[in-house]
Length: 593
Image 1 (cartoon, rainbow, N blue to C red):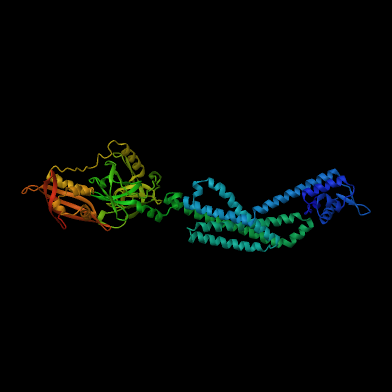
Image 2: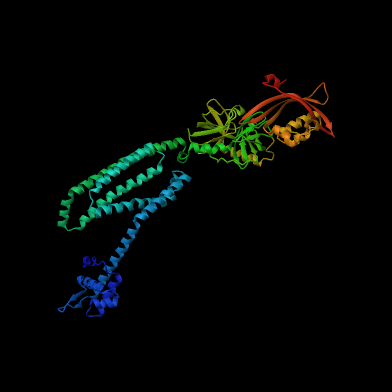
C-alpha cells in the first residue's frame, strides 16, 4: 500500500483528509459528492476517487457504485503516509532552492568580492590574522563546491550520459595542469589560482556523486534486475571506478605539488620576516615612504629626517648640534625654518617642529625583526654635494647591539650608511620604521632602534629642560660688533623683518622690505666664520662668512669677506655701508686666519 500511496502526486494533504471524513459520513461516495464538498472540479473528483480506489479506501458493488470499506486504522495510516509525502516534497523544494544556480552564482560572486576586499586591506593571509573570518567563508565555500557538483551529477544521471565522466576526468586533468602552470609562471595571480581550484573541486565532487547515484539506483531494483543492470553496466561501472581512482591519484599528485609550493612559500616568508611581510610590496613601501623623508640642513652639517607626527620631524642630534634654527627641505625643494622642540645629545636624537604637515610613517617593532631580514634605508647622502631625491639602500639584519652608557639599542645592517643619511628612517619591507640611521662605515650601518626612540622620546617629553644641549642665538645691538652679528643671526633664523630694521636708510636707498628680501629668498643658512673690529678705523667691523642657497634641487655654498661700516642713528647701531666680496675656492687656511 505504501508504494501505491507514493504514486499520489496531485492530491494534497487537506484534500485527502477531507475525502476520508466524507467516507466516514456517507455509505456511498461519488465524484459529484467530492466535487460539492471539496469545491473542486468534477475531473479532480474523478481522479481522487481513482486514487482512493487504488489504495483500497473504497470498493465497487455490482451496480458500479462505490461503497465504504475503510477502517479507522487504515485511515490513520493513509494520513500519516500523506504527511510524510508532503514533508518530503517540502524538503525537496527547499533543496532545489538551495542548489539553484542563481543562488550558487550569487554566493560565488559574494565570496570573490569579499576575498578581493579583505586581501586589499589585510593581505592574502587575512584568515590567519583573523580566524573568525574562516568560520563564515569555509561553509560558503563548501556550498559553492557541493551545490554545482550535485547539479552536474544529477543532470548527467537524468540524461544517462554516463560517458560524460570520462570528459570530466579529462577536464579535471587539464585544469590541474593549468593550475600548476599558473602557480609556477603567474605566482602573483592568487585570485586566478583560487578560482581554478574551486572548479577542480567541483569536477572532483561531481564524479563522486555520479558514482554514488549509480550505486544507489542499482540497489533499489529487484535482484534479477540488479543482475541485469550489472551485466548491462559492468563495463561502464568499471570505467567509472577506474576514472575515480585516476581522479584520486591526480588529486593526490596535485596536493603534493601544492605542498611543495607551500613549503617554498614558507621558506620565502621566513626569509622576509613572516607571513605578514611577504604580502608587502617594496615598491609600494618606498613610494609611500619617500614624501615623508626630508633633508635637514644645520649650520656645520647636513643630514636627513622623517615625519613622525603632525608637523614633527625626527633626526639625529649631531645633524643640528651647532644649528639652533635648522632648515628642513621637502621633496619639492621648498624649505622651511624648523624649531627644535626637544633634543638629547647623549641619545643623539632631536625632534623638530615645522608648519607643513607630511605623511606620517607608521612604527614597527625592532624586537620582531628576524635574522637576515631585509631592511630598507633612506636619506640624503653627502648633503648638498649630491642633489636629487632621497637615496634608497637595501640591506639585511646583521644583529642587534646595545650601548650601556647611552642606554640605547641599535639595529645593525650590512648596508653602508653614508654621511648625510643620518636621521633618515630604517624600515622593513612593509615601510614600518624599525630605526633611525645614525652612523656607519664600509659594509656596516647602525640605527637607533624604534624601541629606544620611543623610550628617549618619552624621557625628553618629561624632561624639565629638553633643550639644554641646544646652542642659543643671542641678539644684541649694544655695540658695533654685536650689531653686525645680530644682523646675520636674524638672517640665519630667517627673521628678515628684524634684519631689515638694523639696516640704515643710507644702505636701503629708498627700497622697501619686499624688494630687499627678494635677494634672500633662496638663503638656507648663514654662518659667521670671523667677526672683529678693525684696528685702524673706528666703527668698522671686519667679517668672514659662508652661506648656503637652495638653487633648484642643489645646495650652493658661497664664501664672503669684507667689512661693514656701522654708525649710531637715533640711539641705535645701524649697518651703514658694506664692502663685501665673494671668495672663490678659499684655501684651508682661509677659515682659520
